[in-house]
Length: 360
Image (cartoon, rainbow, N blue to C red; front, side, top):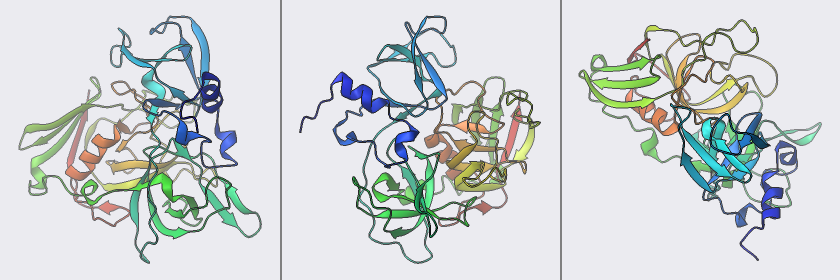
């Protein structure tokens, strides 16, 4: 089999969108595709510009969930907080609303102990979840689960009959949609090793840890005994209500808080099965069904939280509905470092939490 793709093959491949996922959880031919640097379009539309600047002419557009090969990463002058652009077919795209992905197939488990749940992450660009009902049989669900999203699994079962996959499927435990089970191909899910839940510096007393967020500079700092042990840029809430008058403020609140709950895998936004808002709609102004938000640490009862982000790479400027968006590996660090100490197999942990100070 020829292991290289022609330009025509690539354009056919990169043109696959969610409509194609209704028939298969796989991207056809992906085992032959060079995914050394591939991005997923993580918003409705991204313009491809002639040069790496926002005032350059638009050559063409890419659309949500299309996969695009990156030829080169370049650093431009703008925007100041994130001047990285990618050279792709047709020109340049800014990385702000892009999602770097890979395809890494996993070896499935043969079984999971009764009553046990395991934390996993998606390791393909996207995978379609399926649900089963006696009336309709197996049905695909939308949106898919995306690369880097984190999910609980609790059972290994047979799934729908697929022409391109006949292996095991994992049953997803989704706390927002826990009354309806759904499944994904097991080869698309990596089981996290224990160190991803191992506490960091648990011997440091509760009162000697503190988190600070500066909304003016979009920076987060973590302190032990008054000294900085971690810092990074983040994306806080977009000031005001950019959603068109929903009445839900999107500004991240300033003040003193504390970590209230820690959830390794959180379904935010609306349910798959109806527009209920119990899942927290503060994560992202551009998405309303967000299953598998990684390493979530809530600090208000209204749903504001620190959490990982798989739908943009635009840190350093406000992007959310009010939450503090972080890179997923950094949110995992904060999740493990902050009090309360998370219990390994718990879907959520509540307790005396680390102080959070948010200011301008």
